[in-house]
Image 1 (tube, rainbow, N blue to C red):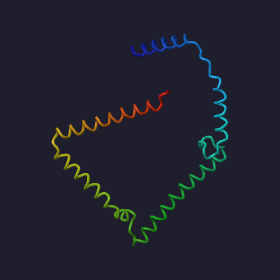
Image 2: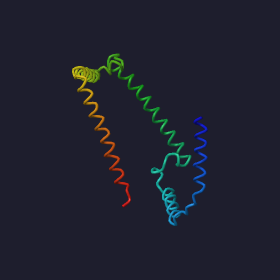
Image 3: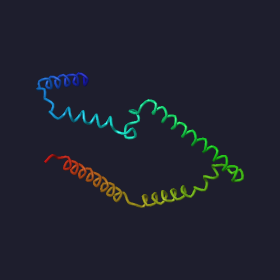
Image 4: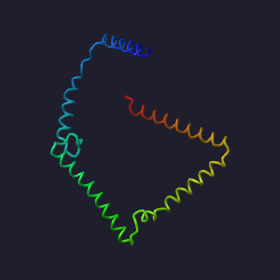
Length: 154
């Protein structure tokens, strides 16, 4: 049923569009487009998209990127082996335990937030949530107004 409606709507829109007259292009359109294409063609290679680079440079840069990733992975493998040997056969996992304090701090903060969240009565929680939502909608509205003012043609 909906597919028939969509097809009928498409036909009616197409019919209305065909009734409209063709609009001539502005006189300055073709020179502006050609100038933009010329400027893009003259742009330095590092300002172009990688897909628009010459094929040889694409192949060289891809090979360099693959080599760099391989070197980083190999260097990480060697480093992890040296860490294990230099630390008296201590594994890399044990080395990472030095950063366990980050997990402890985050866990403590999360637990504190949980305690505060449980102590707040429900009507305060709903009120704060509503206030945050209203502030969000206000930001969207102000942003929309600023955008419309910025692009308006005076």
